[in-house]
Image (cartoon, rainbow, N blue to C red; front, side, top):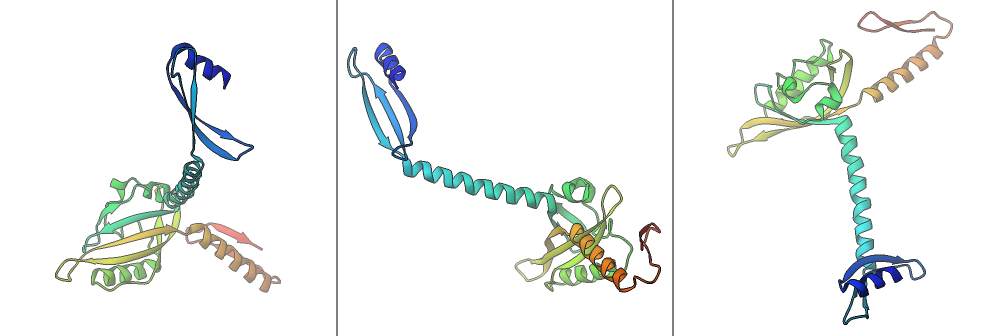
Length: 212
């Protein structure tokens, strides 16, 4: 610290800085000032606890930052009115399905596939609009790029002061990778059971995706 002390003596200006003393495993706030010409004095304040608290806060913030990034990658929040038209979509819908918020503010059936699961989605939604809380259910919808994505939806009806349903709010979780892994496991098991037979798997778009 000799250079710092020398600068204080020469300029007469006080300097405050923080430093970690490894032998003591402590952090100090050090104030250096010149009480009179040609002399300096120092004040040491132990700030170890504050630095530990700051470090703990930083680690906590990092943990929640990673959590938020994960949520933004795999989840989006929505709200729709009793006509089934989305009135709010969180920006993360772009990460999950490729659409902008404005593009997705349509009727909830706009981007659903035409497979049988859609009828179940309609049923759950109608019951939510009627005020009946639904268990989590799966949705099959199109990504803007054209691929099919699987979502797990958890939603609740929202009531006014008279108990009338005015909206439905929910959160959608992209479970496409999980569904694909389950499908692969199912096909693997089925193929092992039927190993002696010729097996050809075809998707709903007529594309062959497995031949034993």
